[in-house]
Length: 192
Image (cartoon, rainbow, N blue to C red; front, side):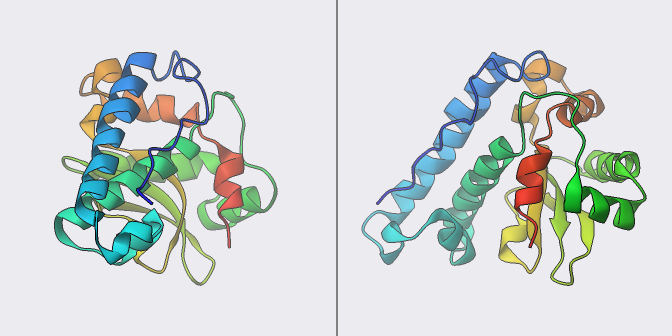
């Protein structure tokens, strides 16, 4: 069965004014769709055409890996956003953030520093390592922690198409908007 473009978990206008409907149309409707189409073109008629996307990412390389990882990263990214503004993490996730970073504000500062240091395109992640520790990591281009031992909890897309329409080349303003949309419940649900 071919890989499907996942529906957004909210309407295209739900993230405004932080992320515009125009950006979501371009980002989800064109870029994400293009990655899904590229995966399907490369797996058609192979043993991978019945694999879930996560398994394709873990078992591929080259152009197929790049398309599959981008498709997976984007699908995960949409889940990390939610139109509810102003919420903070709670429960086990909040406890782990406080233990690992000091508080949520310090996590944001470390995450933003790491995201601003990515030259070109990539991703900023909050991950849980195999030993349970939380960490901020970045990946370049299509790379993803999905292929390693860390569990992704939260991601911010740092590719220019994620923010150029709304913020031009001002990545810091985009990151400030990102924090107003973080779906902490989804991040908490990823904890192992």
